[in-house]
Length: 409
Ligand SMILES: *[C@@H]1O[C@H](CO)[C@@H](O)[C@H](O)[C@H]1NC(C)=O
Ligand SMILES: *[C@@H]1O[C@H](CO)[C@@H](O)[C@H](O)[C@H]1NC(C)=O
Ligand SMILES: *[C@@H]1O[C@H](CO)[C@@H](O)[C@H](O)[C@H]1NC(C)=O
Ligand SMILES: *[C@@H]1O[C@H](CO)[C@@H](O)[C@H](O)[C@H]1NC(C)=O
Ligand SMILES: *[C@@H]1O[C@H](CO)[C@@H](O)[C@H](O)[C@H]1NC(C)=O
Ligand SMILES: *[C@@H]1O[C@H](CO)[C@@H](O)[C@H](O)[C@H]1NC(C)=O
Image (cartoon, rainbow, N blue to C red; front, side):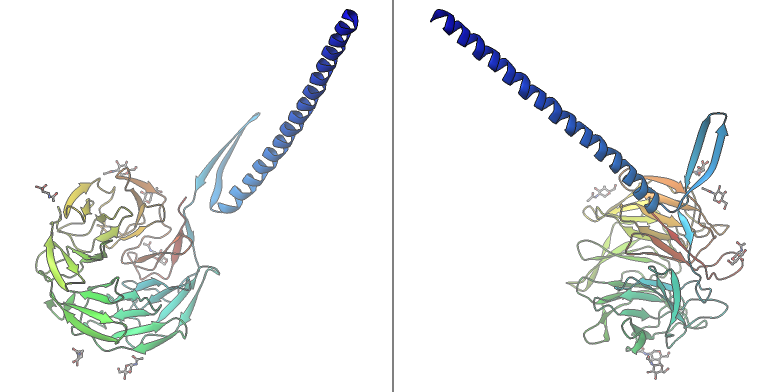
């Protein structure tokens, strides 16, 4: 009894040991399989990632390969700018508008003469095609995409005369529709789409007169109505739609260069004076940042400016931020999808090909690769894929028909 009991115990202990060993072996085999599978998956993923990385960065070019006996060093440079197909016309002081179909409509501008021609860029095929010409030649005009998908063109300069005509482009029929004239002839004015679907036009020059007047286009009636006038007459100023629905107008000039800024309230239909900029300036840029502040850069006072400043809609105050590397006016500013602002070209004593990127989180500027061409009075449009199409403008000798694409990294 005692023996059998101890034998039983022994046997049962032995059985337990064997069972434990058997399951331990199974666990080891299981873990080995899992590790092997993980290794295979990781290897495949790395291979695939390489393929994906190579295919999404076609602008990456190997610029030098140094082979030293057994060591190979490869330097890779990002080439941000790619030339696109050319426009049919050289043009500066034109307009460029991203349509709802993803194409870019370019209108008018100045070549040797003012132009009435219009063309479309198709990013998916990288080609420019001619579309119907406007009824009037014009440069220094405005173009605004309406909520109904049509584009409103207003005023401008028709062979050295200011004009009050406006026209409407319908992308579906690729044709121009008649619109009633503005109440004023205007050159170098602004046009902004409001949250209520109307378009606010401000200031500009009529003949020799600097305008403080403003008017609204209503797409439902296809008509213009006067609204309150600004506190200052302004030409070559900026207008920016803020997140609170108001329009911030900054700087510009009349007989003097302005540092004043004012806000239009679409609900009240009236203007109020807001904080003054630190620098008076015209032909500058203004960009709404993701945090709701407005970045103003460059422009002209007596000389071209490199200063930049930020407007805070809550305090209605301006604070200076880091200067750009270059003084510039008639440059472009584009808010990228990553929140940075791309400043291209422009003019100081020279025509510029240089490009700078503002990082609002660090308040710093980074110089990035030059454009292929020097240009001022050009345009820059953010495409639906986040790339920026820069086109036209002038270099020191002529109006440009070239266009180039910037791809954010
Ligand atoms: C073109 O202009 C003429 C007058 O200059 C006018 O009669 C005609 O209606 C205009 N057409 C469009 C589409 O604006
Ligand atoms: C527009 O300008 C034309 C030519 O200067 C003028 O005859 C016409 O009265 C103006 N229209 C308006 C609404 O002011
Ligand atoms: C705006 O700036 C001025 C001068 O720096 C300052 O005195 C004032 O308090 C500021 N206003 C607001 C609302 O922050
Ligand atoms: C502009 O950038 C160049 C090149 O990085 C640098 O040498 C120069 O000091 C910068 N100038 C200013 C005013 O920031
Ligand atoms: C850009 O071009 C200018 C001359 O226009 C040159 O001085 C500068 O070094 C270039 N910058 C870069 C980043 O290539
Ligand atoms: C101006 O642009 C034209 C056309 O692209 C080009 O042939 C010419 O060399 C440019 N001139 C300068 C000074 O960059």
